[in-house]
Length: 380
Ligand code: PMP
Ligand code: GLN
Image 1 (tube, rainbow, N blue to C red):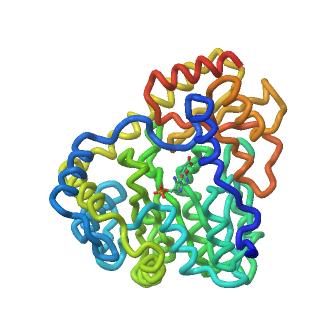
Image 2: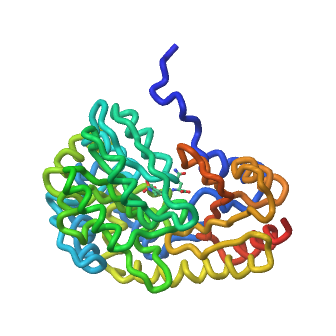
């Protein structure tokens, strides 16, 4: 009937594992979303704006009021000035922003460097744009970037590099040195960059998030993506934003206006109100999530899993090699059915999965859920 443009793609692992968790009534530590509510003031702001009649189209680039609040947050947290008019675009989720950025800059036959394990939405966007993903594996266990491999992978067709820090699924973060390397290679070969920083505020152990926006020569060639879903615990509100130089923003908006046109209006008002009243809220997140990470990891001390505490995101990898040599995709399903804890197999995010044995668990959950999940995992 129709030749598929994405023949290798099925339903995402997040959708499948959440459905299985529901079917088995398992604790769902698979798909990344909090099981607790957003701040009350944000929820009330949303209700207020819906009732106040803020229910029609917002301006295509997003409410100026929200873009001004975003600029204030970027100054507060990253120390950078961004022009709300020409550099900030509010989007219906980072996923849409990534898709539009890829569409805007990847053409037929272009090569795009991605790092495995790679977030699942990147390659389909590249393929639909007519490009080709060149997969470079991150280092085993540390999930760092080997910059020599990056240099060796560049060809005259290379157009774009996509990075993600803090990194889903590993939790690894890029250092200032990594971003300097990225900046140098992008400049040397005149490449564009998509920097997926949706977990920017979830960085632990006193470390600072390093943003592509903080490196001027890198910023000049980058689309940087953020998500309110992560920062404000409202993944279902699907609202985020992209910061890019004016020329890149213009091209991003040309695509965005014909994919979704605009982000949801009352969400934009609500988030802007909340940021205006609680600008320091994101600064509370590292402590909040680090405590959950530690609670979960501590409760697993007597298990047969091994772990290195996650450096960022709300995901924790557990190494099950002392328990089983079976594939992670098989165990994720079996353990959801048999032990009532759902997780995400990370081999799914590789072109060629290496010989390692990790499952990803989301710790954005109530403490009792984390303790119950850990108790079940300790029994394996
Ligand atoms: N990038 C990464 C690495 C993610 O984990 C997510 C989470 N869902 C997204 C992008 C998409 O964010 P959003 O829900 O705002 O589309
Ligand atoms: N980013 C979320 C995760 O990694 C999932 C979002 C989705 O289901 N597409 O779990």
